[in-house]
Image (cartoon, rainbow, N blue to C red; front, side, top):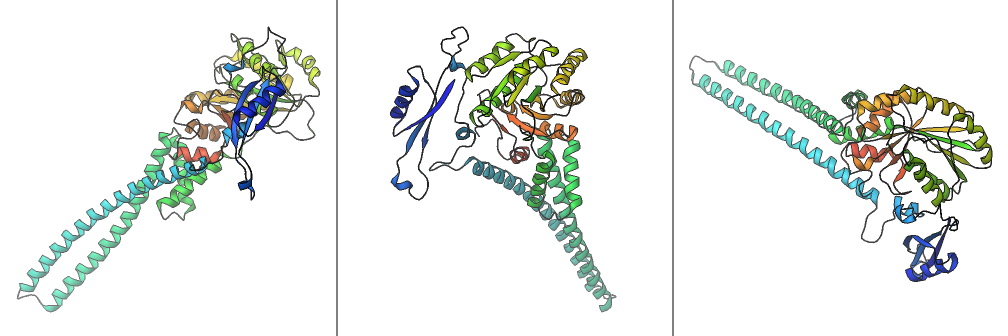
Length: 446
């Protein structure tokens, strides 16, 4: 497939340039408006950029596939990181405002609760003071009472009021702190963060001290979650690593490994200009090979089917000059030891090369199942985590749970079927905001 970009003063002009250059069979893949920037922007015209493509293997009619069924967008940065336009704020600003509104709402709730608590305490103290005044008046009318006795009663009542006021302030602060903690833990557990880890986060920030207000507490929880999520481990090799570099994908059935490979392949080709090939050993699932071949043909990527582990060395020898080989494996059930043994055998052949391994998991899987799955795959090798289907769930606490359970590095998140748009490097700040109720997170119009 040949992919090129063309610019014109109008959309029609840009499309005509694409058709003249690539031929009448050219497919328009993306159209965007490019606004002038810099000091001289007032003297420059707004341009329209068209990304177009033509199938370089059009004469191979048996393998030709329709690109209408797969949304391949060469302008990845424009969609993943849209620039702000007039009258619109950036996505990050919107999410920050959503988080601020959510935190303000939480703070207002707590302030309202503590204010009610103070009013109740004030009413109680007023009742006690009135009772004390009645006792004082009775003592004043008692002819047998002395001036010293009246003075003592006043002094005692005053000391009692001071003690009650101090006790009320202390109790109010403790009540405020407890309610703040409970609300934050409730927010985290509603997002399916394990209670053990939610409580652990609160304990750590409280032991650190310097928590005076709800804002302090929320800020500390936010930062603590980001630190616990840690740094991401994306596709990266040392310069001296031998070619080809192997990127090995494994995981349960139905989590989206094949679609994830297609998305990452597109990015490696379109953004980094890498030379890649795809190997697949998924000969079990019906139409699995045809699915990955469809993606490979559109991107003009060579594909090899691995039927037995012993074939790997001979096949790899054909791709010595390639940058990456992405290996798609069949989904394996954590309840089937024989299938896992087959996967180990295949992996052991590839590990002789420069290899990076990813475990692909669905964010919609139950935490209890994720614990079993990660334990089983961790026995095969050290791997990094890719979470898919974030668009199919509102609760993403399992990302934090699995990270803390396994210590595996997080890498990418996927949130839709569009290739290559709906995938990006996991951003700990976005995850932390969503866990605290700040915005809709991935897959919700970001």
